[in-house]
Image 1: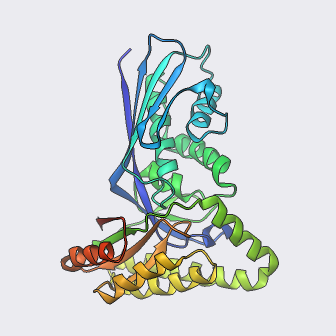
Image 2 (image 1 turned 90 degrees about the vertical axis):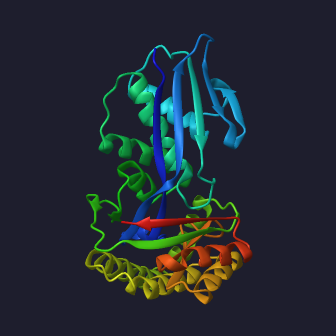
Length: 310
């Protein structure tokens, strides 16, 4: 049988993380510079063998716990698509996306692996089916995820997302440039989502008001992007970051990179994703992108990505 291959991009949240779990809008974009890639081959040796060197995984499926991130995708796919008996496979997974950094590494691997398996077994699968399946996998690992990671990665388009509502992609009126800075600190989204929920449970009235503010920022940001008023996004990023600090999901390292970006020419900056580590983003004029990128690296960023949203 011919080898099947699939890829899926990374993603970055522009606005609305955490509040999106509580029904407010969020904006996210795919980051095509990083991606997960999966190859599936028929195998002559018994079992389903997984080779994922980026996470130091070289194992047969049945030796992994059923809730292992990769094993859960394979088990659930084979069950839902009624593949029986289990075939003998060699699965190679590689990824340029740092784990637990807010770039959607888990969802990207899930989407790429799902598509590669579907192609291998000649099972036609729509984007909507991939997205629904990936969301169920996200729930296993993140508790109460927003669904934004799997959505923007599956469709590989800028997404305006409200949990439980139909997916909306949106038009970018004028291209703009972002610098993404990675703290190098790996932090689990599940833990920060859980901690925000504890805060919300302790004082729902106060936190609903804060989530409303985040939602308003996200709506204004969409309007600014669609109308090409991209300079307005900088101040909106700064406002969103302050609210994320209140949620206790930022960190000294993220705050330092945000401050560094603004002080060296960025129009605005904020943490992105689950927080406590991972990435921040800065809006920059394209001619300042390299300067801000180098400043972030001097300030401790382990890696930077310059991406244009268009």
